[in-house]
Length: 75
Image (cartoon, rainbow, N blue to C red; front, side, top):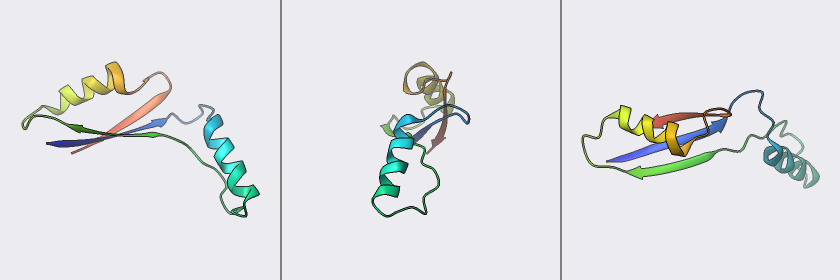
C-alpha cells in the first residue's frame, strides 16, 4: 500500500529557503509570485492493512518536526 505524506512548515514559522526561492523567481522575471513555502513530500510503501495511526506515529516520531511542521497523510 502506498502512503503519501506532505510535511509543511507551520504558519508563522520563518521559511528562509522559501524566501530565497521567491526572491530568485522575482529576479528572473516571475514577479507575480508573492510568496513561497518549501515543504517535503514522502512516499511510503507499507504493508496492506497498516493502520493510519501507525503512519501518524511514524510522522510524529521521525518524518516531521511537530514543533515547527505540520503533516498531512494521504493513502
